[in-house]
Image 1 (cartoon, rainbow, N blue to C red):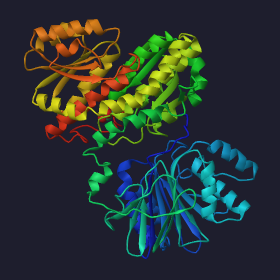
Image 2 (image 1 turned 60 degrees about the vertical axis):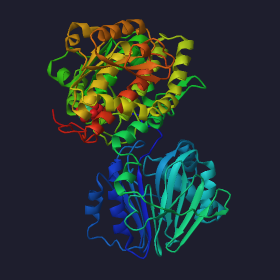
Image 3 (image 1 turned 135 degrees about the vertical axis):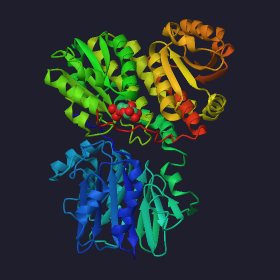
Image 4 (image 1 turned 60 degrees about the horizontal axis):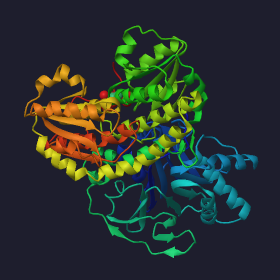
Length: 620
Ligand code: G6P
């Protein structure tokens, strides 16, 4: 099974209190949040006692389950869960209940110190029914309430002083059926203000059809919400004046976080998602790396005869980058295979081989079947997946989740950079185990990884500049993307992204190989994108640029800040921050994602759902 990281995010939260029937309002709200991606759903109401219902799968499954049940209530909390901590299951779905079943909680975020709290609570006799940190929290609140003889509100305030992490929490109490208590730190929470009614949600999309008056809750604030009363308190228990805002956004804009498309939103999420993929694993200040359950396979990886990476599409490109990383760091031969080819060509594989399956969805049929047969033949299977509990994750002996959150845009962006970050960590872990890296280089690369999120932020600031470049080249019939070394797979990914999003024919090539064919295409109408950051291959790439220039090709170059040579040769330049060549692909791909996005939009393409493509290809 894949390693469960102590992290849970992207879930959706909805609640209602007021004179309407609460359950239908919350159910509809949960459906409004479906765009965020989730794997299970649940609700709790109070009607002759507290009742909680939860179900793995779609909100519609939950709805079917509840048909015919007595759902009358004027208070309801609901949740859609996207698992990253505890497998998707009925058991792990929210709400979670206290030991006496009087309190119900829904939670979005992480309780980083839940293991310590769980240990203490178990010693005090608490019994847990799920694997979640959320259940630990509700038991912790119950324990404080019982031992301090205080209100739930007070117990929550005390509990949160010990909680390390980020969260939005909603809590209801059977003995206090006219109140919802909420708290926030680090995750979003919006209150909708109606006439004699209130709504709560992770974003305004479940609220907007009822009211446009909202209050965005701030970090460390506690909310006590009744049908006709909203009390906001800070962590020192002082009453705050709520700042009521009027929403003037459309529903679709809210779902996309204010961005025009999910793809752009996901591109812009990358500083956070890359950080999340490293979180809890990399501690550059202490010089440590911890890959959870995958660490148990460090010895197996170290002794592997070879590593075979199997994947499809963008994930295959991540595998190619990993080939460069792992061979350099660990001196282990690495092969990167298209899963569809690998599965059919009766590959020579068996004990001693380690297969790394890379997949955003964890459901790609070709990748799944490829690892199934390799597993039967005795290979060790490690999975790098984004979707927790997915088929590939379950089939793997061990692995690591990428923690990029749900990716809605069909063309993969944030999942790709998270894959690169995690694969780099794997390479570093094995190199350390094998002794093929010096302490100094190890520390340097930890520092380099640590610095990536900020570098991504600075590249995103070039969005408008890249849009101008996109406008200039949007009518080209073909594009060529070239790079060498670590940037060769990025050239492939740049070409794939452009094809997917804008339907312009594009090819990616190793820059040197270009003279063995694609150079025949070069004329004044052909834009050639060079990924030409300062690395071992730099001088060689400069020569390749000259070769294109001599044939009047148009050159768009992604270069390192401070480069004074290539800008003098290129028609358009995108400067990105300096980075060690081993981690540079994580940042050099970002301008290419933006370039494709803008060209696609300018050409009027449906960038989130390009024609003929599917997000998860579960057929061969
Ligand atoms: C589809 C998607 C691509 C993705 C590929 C592999 O083609 O459109 O974006 O890269 O499948 O998917 P996986 O979920 O295995 O990474």
